[in-house]
Length: 220
Image (cartoon, rainbow, N blue to C red; front, side, top):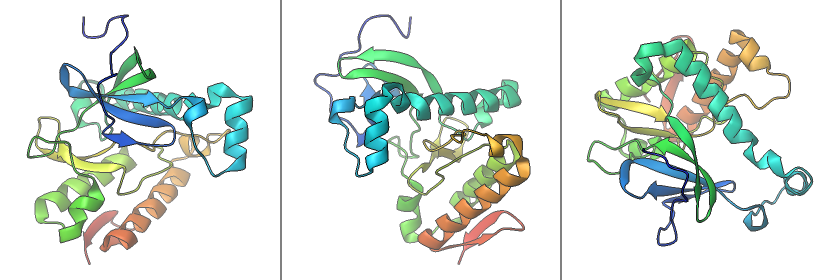
């Protein structure tokens, strides 16, 4: 079995990325997978008083983002069916226990050189060539067409790589409806407006041009 009930030993592993809520590790013995491990509540640091208070009073709130990501990916998977390989989201593949706590197994998106896929802001430093721009705009089209609700679409959450079917862009974090009343999930129009704003902000920061009518990026 790929995933067993035993604890995954990460005692000799160093995280390849750190966040406030999760740290990312390579999955030992599985080069195509990563594990996003939840940071223990007592180890978390936040400058926002409200967030610190919520973590203390409602410990389960720390998993809310991940649950919403799972829900979002389920919706996308149901829409795509057998064309799941076209998903612009990094796949979430199950929950495991590790020596650092509970974690979620996720797909590792590889770069064209075989290493970890670079983030969009890294690719943008030298300008986007035609293949990257084409992949980025294909990603944008999927985000709109599949009605993907994403609360934090930014260049550090988008990577350029491949899952075996040619180069593409993927959203690795920051998706899923988090509002108590899921307005963007219920309204395509509201979600389109939100995506437009977020892509426009990416363009401003990355030195690209964003055409809201055509929903495409171009080199400025």
